[in-house]
Each structure stands twice: as C-alpha cells, then as structure tokens.
Amino acid sequence: MEAIRAKSGVSYAPPRSAASSQGLTGPDALGAAPATREETLQRIAAVRQQIDAATRDDPTAAYKARLQQLQAAGVVPASAGAGQGGGGLAGGAPKLVQTAAGRNDVAQFAGTGQGDRWRLESQPEAPRSPYELRASFVLPATLISGINSELPGTIMAQVSQDVYDTPTGKYKLIPQGSRLMGSYASDVAYGQSRILIGWQRIIFPDGKAMDIGSMPGADSAGYAGFKDQVNNHYFRLFGSAFLMSAVTAGVALSQPEQGPNNRPTASSSMSEALGQQLGNVTAQLISKNLNIAPTLEIRPGYRFNVIVTKDMTFSKPYQAFDY
Image 1 (cartoon, helix red, strand yellow):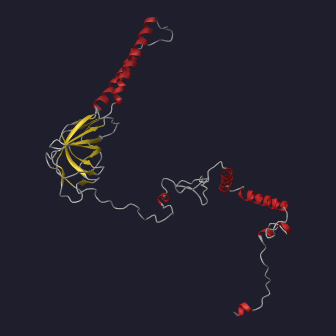
Image 2 (image 1 turned 45 degrees about the horizontal axis):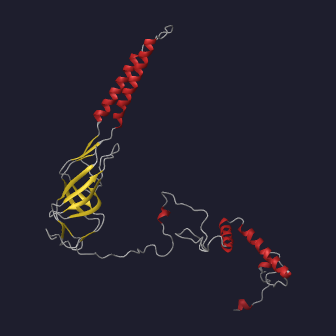
Image 3 (image 1 turned 120 degrees about the vertical axis):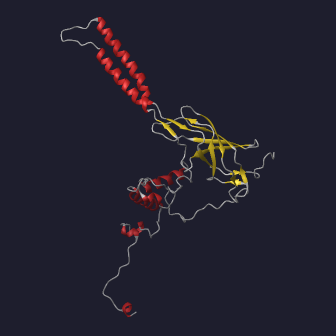
C-alpha cells in the first residue's frame, strides 16, 4: 500500500484510440458521431479500405468476405460454406489449403479435437433370439467334391460337427451331416497358391435348406482360401523355351549364305521368306505356353471352416422333420 501511495516521477499517458492511431481526428474520429450524410459515406468508405487492406494477403478472410457478399445478394444460400466433417473454420468458411498427413505420419491417428475421442458411441446389442449364431463363428466342414482351378464350378461339402448357438451353447442349430453348396473362382494369377471359395447354401439332413449368402471358406488355421496342390507347369514352360530356341536356330540355319558378289535368286529369296514366316508362326504358338497360369487342385476330404460373416437367426433349435 505504501508503494502504491508513493509518488513517482514516471509520467503516464492514456492510450490513444484506434481512430487516433490511424490518423483519424476531428469529426472523422470513431468516437465522434458524423454530423452529415457525406461524413457518414466517407467513414464507410474508409472502413471498407481498411478491410480490403487487411484481407488482401489472407485468402481465407477474402473467401469469407466474398461469401458474405454472395449470400447478401442471394446467389449463394446462407447455409453454404458451413464446415462439415471437420473441414470448416469458425464462421462457416472452409480451409482453402488442406494439409494431408503423410502415409507414415502418426498424426493421422490423432483425434479430431471435438468431444471425447476415447468414448465409443456404440452400445452392446442383445441377441435377437436364443437360437442365434453370431458372426465370426465357424462351421467346421469337410470337402466332398474336388476342386480344379482350370474351370469354375460348383462344389459340395459336409458339416463335420454339430454347431450350437452363441448365447448359451445349449441349442443345436446346424447338425452334423448337413450339406454345404458353394462356388470357387478360376481366375488364378501367376504365383498364386490359394483359391477363393464362397459357400452359398446349407441343406439340412431332413431336407430343409437355408441361403447363407456367400460366406468365405478358410483353412483350419484361419487363412482365407484353400491350399493343397499347386501345379506350376514347369515342364511345359521349360520345354516350350527349349523348343523355341530350336526353332530360332533352325530358321537361322535355313537362310542361305550370300557372298559379297552373289546376287540372290528368286528361289533363294522365296525359301528365305518361307523359313522366316514359318519360324515366326511357330515361335508365336510356342510363346503362348509361356503365359500359362498355375493350376490349383484341392482334393476331396480337405478339412476347412466356413467363416460366419452375418448373424444367423433361427426360430427354434434343429429338429428333424418339424415342418
């Protein structure tokens, strides 16, 4: 208190107003009201010049000012420019320059900063029925028909174990011996060793049937697709290469040698052209064997699992001939 009450030799001057700091004095100062209509127009023009000077180097501010002019003219609706999905700024103007996180940048895993990003909005869902088989469960089965990837086709399998419900595990939903019907893809690329399977229907032992969409098949370890025997056709590939080299050498040997002073005759020219054409045709036919894709074979008896991708709801446990 004594320090506050003590006299000081430091002079204090009150801060100037915004108008006086910008050189506006007298009737043009912001604190004084305009006396005439001309003074009001002059003051509005001066403020517009200040806004233009402030927004000349800021593209976002310029965008906001232009957007307000278009909204006032009725060209753009008032809701335009509102930030949605985290891409907007305060005031409804979106960012003009978007900075994308790199592929190996950990900033892409950061939260948006809005609300609690550690809160999960979803809630646990109760089973629709006690006789339900939830997604991510498996149906153990054994392949009945074999698979050859040279042509697409339909395959059959058989459920090898009884399958029970997910909530309690007491009710048998799919009995052992039920048939599975599915399809496989035949478009195999070079170096591929697994074949894609899709199971579409279940036929129960008592004749009932159920459409299951297209649930994928996986091996006993959970890897997608089936893998058993792979035929890469190495004998055909290397045999075609040796045969092509022999044809190329034969074409070269069939051409007559021309001396420096010997002019080619008609018969020698025809034989040379014939040898070249036959060699080219043969080489093209042999080169097609070099593009052959591997053949995947799955033998009958292959043990696998059908991955349940959608919840399967039954009206009651399985009972034979209850229809």
